[in-house]
Length: 415
Image (cartoon, rainbow, N blue to C red; front, side):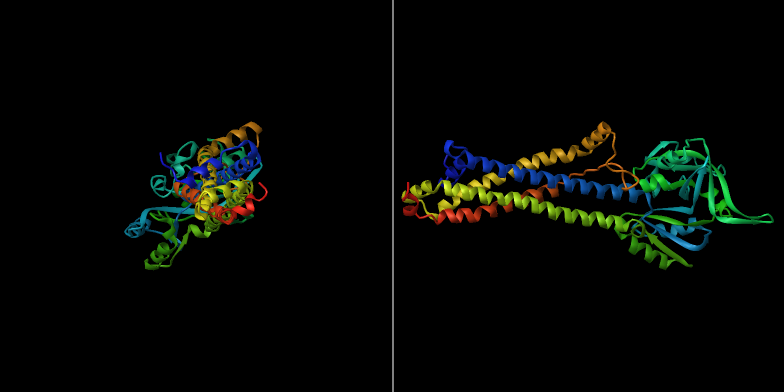
């Protein structure tokens, strides 16, 4: 099979010779360095994609995309919900009541945010029903004052399904004997685990009718409506527009006020870490320069002979560009394969390591999830590989140009 002279000789130069083992070793280390750079970049970007995905699906799947509220209790929430549902971007509507306070049990105290919901409608706007460890959302029957809490809160309070806990509201009741805090006994009917520390530890669910009674509202009155959108990034704009179109004193809130900073931080970290890792790949790619400079120095006699046999400077330059490109291609492909395998399995590997050493790397008390997610995206792999190949090719230009300038008479003077 016919091969151009530059490709044939450049490919041969990548293989070891007895008198140039050191040069070949340097070529191997350059190849390994490039492979490691590509591997690390693919794995880290996949982990950042995993955090981004978990933030969207889990945390933002639990919190409302937006809420429509009023300063006074809303009476006809069904009619209001029907009006909001007409917007093409609104996929679901559900009523809610929120109340902050403390949960106590046998001397243990935990702050809590109770989200009172309609068990029949809540699954349309939340994914909480996917994460129940015990009980179910349907167990929150009206009038029974049941409560569903996260496993972190249950562990802190030392309670399980069926136990009684006391909710202390941040209000007082004035009696002839003085002022007393408002308290209510709830029965734990379910325990969930989302994997997000702030939700598993500080969020609870109750029936919307029970919390309305605790607020001393009329039956059917609610605090507002939770909205779910087809595109959560449109939530701030659309919720503000909807609140302005309603009759009455309504205002909107959206997820960017509660979790927007965290989401933006994840996106910014991905961009910055990607840039830093690209510099690592660039350092590994430009190691090819030193490799090829050494090869050019080692092959000065060969270059001179090729020039005397009629090889043009362009052919000489192409020989060393081929050699450097081969190093870059092999290193990039090796790093891509290993990076893909690592990205697909790193979550399981980290979980196994945590079980082996008995230490949790991601604590739910510190991070918003308690495990290492990974989500491999083909676009990231392609971009990393293209960047590595381009940098590798650019790294070949100077040594190849230097080789093309070799003068046969000077190179053969001391041969």
